[in-house]
Structure formats: C-alpha cells, structure tokens
Amino acid sequence: MLEKFSIFSRRNRKRWLCAGVSLILTLCIGLTNIKASYAVSWVELLLRGVQVIQLSSISDKQEVALGKEINQQLINSGQARLYRGRAINNYVDSIGQRLAKTSQRPDLPYTFQVVNDKSINAFATMGGFVYINTGLMLAADNEAELASVIGHEIGHIVGRHAVEQMRQRAVSQGLLSAAGLDRSQAVQIGVELAVSRPNSRSDELEADRLGLENLKQAGYAPAGMIGFMQKLLQKGGSVPSFLSTHPATKERIQALQQQIDPATANAGDGLSESTYQQQISSL
View 1 (cartoon, one colour):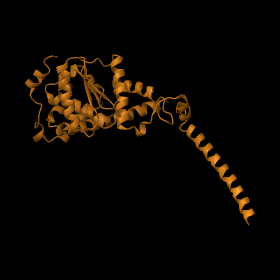
View 2 (cartoon, rainbow, N blue to C red):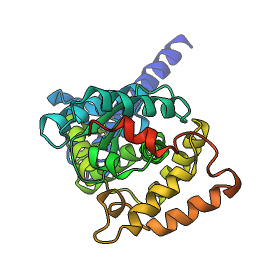
View 3 (cartoon, rainbow, N blue to C red):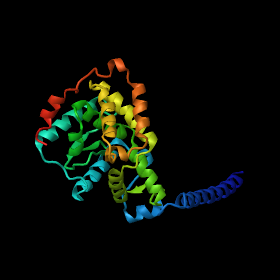
View 4 (cartoon, rainbow, N blue to C red):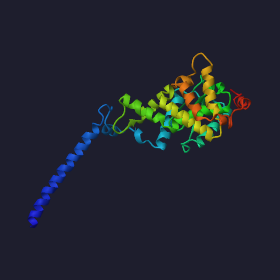
C-alpha cells in the first residue's frame, strides 16, 4: 500500500512540475508579446535598467515628480522663459493658490509661474504646474478674468488630461511597452504636449466646467470667465493663441452661459478694473 502511494506521489510530482514549468513559459511568452506594436518588452526594459512609468495607474506622487521634470525641461530649453518680477509672480501665485484650495485636487503642490511672453496664452502640465503669459495678463480687464484662465488650467490638471494625452501619444508613436513608458521619453512627450496643447473638445468643455465651478467656490464672480472669452473673440484680427488652440470657442461660451445664473453672474470678487491695473502696473 505504501509502495503504491509512493509511486503515485512521484508520478504526480512530475506532473505538477511539468505543469508549473509550462505555466511559467506561457506567462513569459504572453507578457513579452503583449501588443506587438509596443517598442520593447518589459523584460528587455528591466534588463536594461530603464525606469518606466505605468500611466494607467500613476499615483499623485509620481505625477508630481514627472511634472517637475517636465517643468525643468521647459525652463532649461527656453520654451518657458519665466518672468522674474517678484510682485507679479506673487500676485499670480496668490490667485492660483486660492483657486487650488477649492479645486477637486486640493492636495497637489501647485506651482503657478508667469512666462515672459507677449502672446495671449496659458497652459498647464501634470502635477500642478500652471503657466500664465504676461501678454494674457495685460489682455485681462480684471482679476476675475485672470482667475478664470487659471481655473481653466487647473481644470485640465484635475481632469488628468495631460496623463491621458501622454498615453495616447506614446501608443501612437509605438513607445509604450508592457511595463509602461520610459521615463525620459515621458518627459519629452510631456514637454511637447505642454507646448502644442492638443486638447480635445471634450477636455476643453470639462476644463471649462471644472474651472467655472472652482471660480465660484473660490468666491470670484463667474462673469469673468465668459467676459474674457467674449472680449478676445470680439477684438477681430487673428484669434489669440489662448483660444486658437481650443476648439469650438463659441460653443464653449454658450455652454458656460447655460451654467451661470444671470442674477448671480456678477456676484463675487475680482471685477474692479482699477484694482487690477494697480496689481499689474509693473508689467
């Protein structure tokens, strides 16, 4: 009886050993062949010691760290030439931090920076980095209008739009591996996205909605958001870059008008033109 049991055990051990080896080989083959369009396998990346980022499950900490690298590259490359005036930077930061506290991602360490550029522009990258051109500040009539632009850019960060755009760009360029995206490539894509700002119609409408809600929660007059967009469109000539990179501006204005009660549109802070001009006088 014991002899039969021993023979049975030996035979089953062999079967389990073969099954285990087969399973491991199957997993290795399967993982190294996930989505053949990916540039390299996760095994190769790990063997090369390349640091990768899994965009589908990126944490806030990882997003902020990546945003810092993108920000540094933007500055080092001269694509974001920062304005050095302390008073203007402090002013923009005070508005931004006020909005950040009432946003849907208040725990991010937001960084608001002024770019020394006469064009009417603003942009953001992942991890809480927001950039406002001096040209846009001069185009705004009051603080509520400036706050509306900052709120819109915070809306992109809240919606994690840059992370999704990075994933789409990496897939289209065949750079995404089974393990994720090479960190250095992620930084390069992040810089390209920050400059080109290829936001979709749905992203813009969501950033408008989130920005408007944030504007109201922070105590600013919601009329500032519509007022700024309408004024730029009515100026004539070429469309400012702040709007030209955003599709369907008229549609966006109509959507915002439906979200704002005319009776309370001017209720809130930031509508004084004289106070605003004093704040940006050093520009």
